[in-house]
Length: 133
Image 1 (cartoon, rainbow, N blue to C red):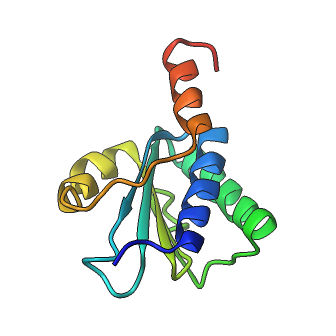
Image 2: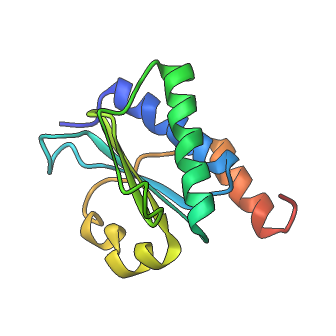
């Protein structure tokens, strides 16, 4: 089993929204073979709590407007350290850098195939690395 086209669409919208709010290390995994509850995980991080919240807000807005999707669950917003957005088809994890390093979701899901993200996400990361964005 692989992630559905709808899941891939949601992943793309979420990743682009995160990139627009300067999220770091945006990755997506097809977890459909391992989990029955969702098709994909999107993971990204930010350097402070305020940025975590801004990324979460942008992802929610873009998924609502561009994909007519609303989360069925939103957890962790009060602390702003690790916010989880559950859209059934995908689950988005926006983590503070410290939580991301400590919990290492990439290590847990390393055997799952990565989902290719839109080129704009890689371009935004490259611009930031060069100090342009």
